[in-house]
Image (cartoon, rainbow, N blue to C red; front, side):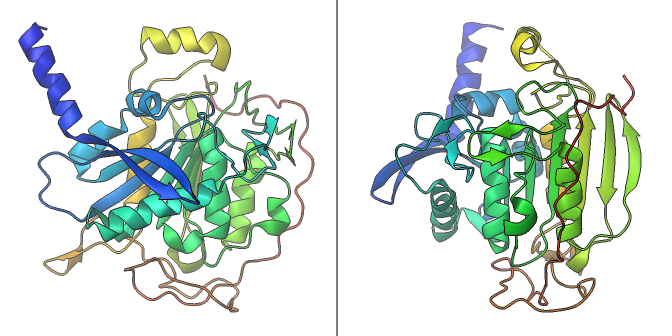
Length: 352
C-alpha cells in the first residue's frame, strides 16, 4: 500500500472517530465515538462497547473491528474508557482482582454517555445497546440487572455471572442478552471460580440464570464452526437469551485470525475463526428496540420488549420501557434458586 493511500485510510478513520469527555460524579471521564460512514444523518442506533481490564479502548476498537460492522449496518459506537483501564463492575473489587480504593460509579458513567449522545441527537434512545468484554462484560451484566430499561439488548464476552445474581438480579423488564464464553478460557473459566469480591457461577449456569429470569421456555441448540450455540427464544415479553460456547480461550471469535492473535493465545488461549463476534452480536441486537417503519414494515425486524404477555403474568412496580420504544407490559422476575456448584472443568461439548 502506498504512503498516499495509507495516509488517506488513516485520515478517513480519524474523521469517523472523536475523542470526547464528560464530567460524571466530579470526575472527567473520556470515551471514543465512532459515527457510521455514508448512512445519512442521525440519530443512529448506538452500541456502547466496554473494554476489558488493562485493555485500552483503542485496542478493543481495533481488536473487535466493530467499526466495520457499524459502517456497513449504519450505527454509531461509543467506547468508554475505564479509570486506569479498569471498571468498577459491581463485584466489590476492580476487575475481580484488586480491592476498590477509589470509588467511582462506572455504571453511571456508561449511562451518562448514553444520555449525552441522545441529547445531542446522535443516538436513538429506543435503539441503544450495551456490550462488553471481560471486565467490561461484568459491568455490562451489572447494568443489565439494575438498569434493564436503558438498553434494548445486551451482550457479554468472557463473563460468568456472580452467584449472588441469583438473588440480586431483579430487572425491571426481561433482558435480551447474548453471552459468549471460551471453553479453554484461563482468565474467566467456563466452570466458574471464586474471585475477590464475588464467587462466579459457570458459564452454562449463567446463561440458564438469565433464561429463568426472563421466564424462557425450552432452549434449542445449533452447531457452528468451533462453537455450540444454545438459544432461548420463547421468553417473556419477546426477549431472548443466546449462549455461545466457543472452543477458544479468553478471546472472542473472529472471521480471521492474525499473528497477533496467535501470540496472545500463549496467555489468553486460542482465538477461533469462523464466527465473527461483532457481527453475531449485532445480528442479535437488531432484533430488539424501537425501529422505524418503512412501508409498514419495521426496519431490522425488531421484537419490542414487553409487547407480549410475560410468562407467568404478575407485575413489578416501577417497570419502565426502553426510551422511545412501545409501552411494555409489567414483568415479574421469576424466583431463581442458587445454581448447583459447577464441577472442575468439564469436557467441552462442542466439536473441534
